[in-house]
Length: 294
Image (tube, rainbow, N blue to C red; front, top):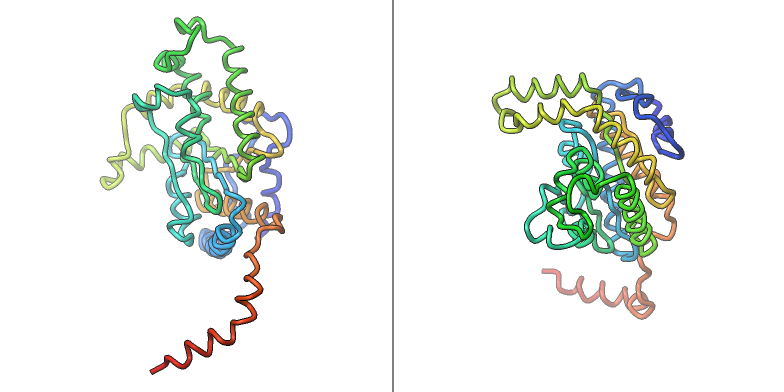
């Protein structure tokens, strides 16, 4: 199995989403792919323990993608070997009344992971330049000064939001948050098949909403908005990765591998050294405990 091509998933310059692949299997079977990401996730779990002991960095994993792209199952599989207290997942839905009383980034800022922990945003602050761009009428609920109607929401408005998001990410990166942004790139045909499975499998019916089909009709508009958002906000301190999502197991392996390959570059993330006095007395502590035996 050759997974070296995952290096090409990182966005280093302008791209067209239509030119990006949606399927990858790395020439491996499902069984091989699963074994590989299971091995990597154990390493990630161990690294999180060290990250916690080190106490200077946090990790933010942002997941975006069209409906059925596999975000939920990816989170379940990739982070399965983490200490449950070491990873916190937030799924951002329609803003609440309280959230709408603050600026649009507020609810994301207060959900950021503490130092030593992983935070996963299942849908992210990018919804504010994606869903709201496809449905600009949602912006009116934010009660923004100077925005009196949808007609006031022009390209300059969205450019300001891109700048604000870039500033937000630069700030948290500068203060110790390591940022990963993954776009799970799904084909329209694969989404159709996955929606049909939701309808055909009774145990999956609960996941289906007629609204899914309405949003699907806006596929091309969403793709255009994703493309611009990615091109405007992929930065060295907060890069985007375009992960082919038609094959779920390969997508999980891709995300796990990218996290592991990038995080192990941080050579300063290591367990703190034991206090000199405690280290000098280790033998006496052992002796005391051994005498208690029986």
